[in-house]
Length: 107
Length: 226
Image 1 (cartoon, each protein chain N blue to C red):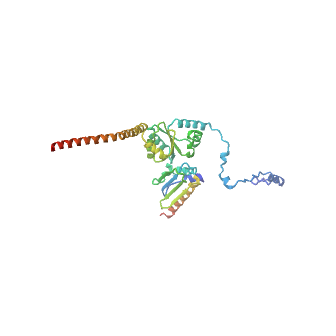
Image 2: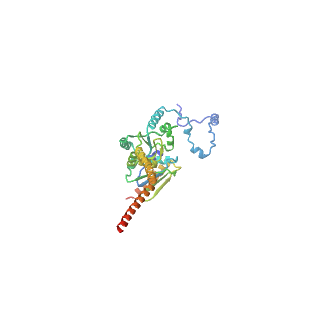
Image 3: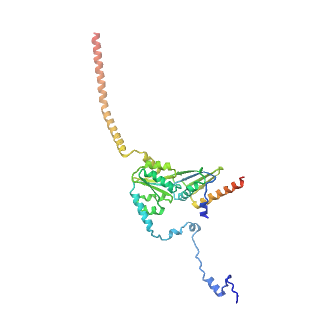
């Protein structure tokens, strides 16, 4: 399941992705993995207009990923206790919902 | 010939079935709370097996880390091999090199060395830049241009630095210029005390001179009047 979720990651309908983390926190590791998976060239090619913004903080703050979609909706991961796999699964699930909605609502 | 049903398994004899049921292995009940069983990674409890390849790479890694004056750790944001080569080519102009080591290799390499403070920011997507000269300004420029890597920390001339400190370091002048500035500051205070000590006497001298001139002028006037 997980592997399939990793393969299905795409940035269709995504406008911007913001990441902020403190590298000295242990909880930031999974978030960094998640972002590195999302920001590969293969995934970036699915939507070249998507912007990536990374903020490296050194104040011990908790990691966060904010994903902004085309329709103005936002998805915020407060990923202190989240695994990379969980985040990817959730993200792909929402993505697939949007794809299904676009297919049904389209001409 | 009697037909034999090979598809259905023949039921066991009742006595044998009883014995089999009796001798079945029963797993002892896990008394730990659910939270603990979920979080404990059994893999870490296994004895570590020596990996000669890893030790070899760790040695190489340690050697290159210890021989360099500048070590910078970057967060890699999905750079593939092509991007890495491009980055390496840019950094090669300033005698810097890009290294991508596995996490376990670095962990073994920095164990009980001065680099052990990097342990917290280690990650499998990390990217390391090493150089024999502390050319921080060039490094920061190249990193900013690439846009895909983010500085997490570094070790410049045996001193750990955060990105902010590294930026300040890059803007600071070189050692010779700094020495010149220090000499200038010391000289300026010397010259000031010199001038302060002499100022009273100079004032007095100028005042006396003016007085003397005034007297001469007034004397001359008086003479002309008389």
